[in-house]
Length: 130
Image (cartoon, rainbow, N blue to C red; front, side, top):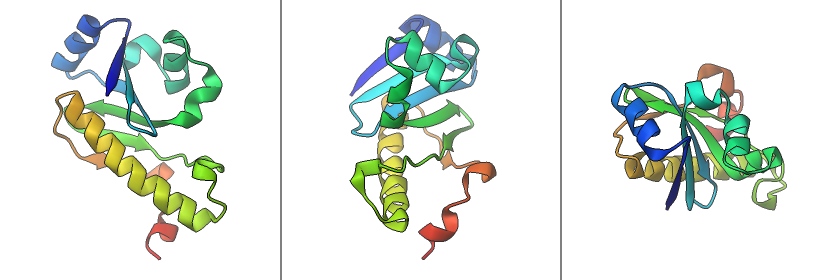
């Protein structure tokens, strides 16, 4: 797992020690983590640009805001996720993949926190209960 820091590793570790919120992007395949203090990048798509990715690559990553109190997952499932045509199946697979990859990323950065999905992103949870 490759971890990329913006603007640099030392700066991000200082933010971690201060318990500042961090933007974290975790690639769907779990091979990349992008991290920045939220004050340095403000939004996930800005973090991508600052690390020389295209904004359109946002749909290659699970989007998380994390500190030592928890990890808030911005649950946005792309309509073409893994080319699964069934909405119910796609959302279920996306959810399970996200829990797996985000959990690994949390461990990789040395945190031990729960993953939470803020209420405003839970609109598909009725599908997951079926």
